[in-house]
Image (cartoon, rainbow, N blue to C red; front, top):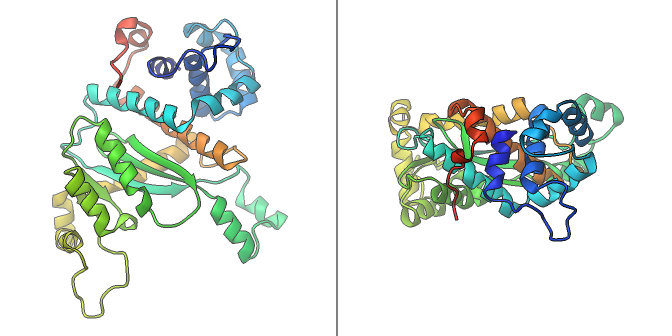
Length: 321
């Protein structure tokens, strides 16, 4: 809670409007939302938890506990794309100052995963008769929440992400994942390892020509040649040679791509694989909150930040302008 409050204090305004009642600041409400997500509570459950632990609220300067409606409305104000990106900027800056990213030793890895759109079980849905037929399946796939993440393989910290809904190719998210990571980290010459879903000559050109990043993507998209000819495109042919054998994949660092699968598992095991939001936008906000809370948990464990240091003003680390 203290880490979340200290991170939000540098990038969020105190109040969303000049006409606000000014009972709580936005950094305080974000800290409450982080506790809610980490403990796996609903908004009402988070209110009850904070009432039982009012000393947590006093530690960040809150005179009373916000009710569940206040927390729900605060999530819509705080977890926008712009403010979510600014909060992630701060967390990645903290990780770089703590020297836990280590992108010079292990690559940047990217992948996507899906979450459940409701917390009920598959067995309950089958007994209720939901999701039967091709039309129902198409509607379900179209609404399925999707999260694409780019992580530092050395520490499992999420450096960039994309949140949305639906199924399909991962290639459209490649540029955003890579560019957001490139602008956030101090080391601009790292390797980027992605799975075959991001394969495409244009993606190699974006990374190598525009950002100077060495990409590692298996050239597996498309129908394989019957004659065994090399893939089309300069960089796709190069990938076919570099990733040809197990030894070469280990030597170039592509085997570290599996660390992003570990992060997907950590997100679902620690913070839940089901979302509580009913609309697409509320589910996207839930995914943003999961990513931010995951990074806070990683920083608390990896960087070993002490609570006494967080309380002091001197610990306020510099944030991007």
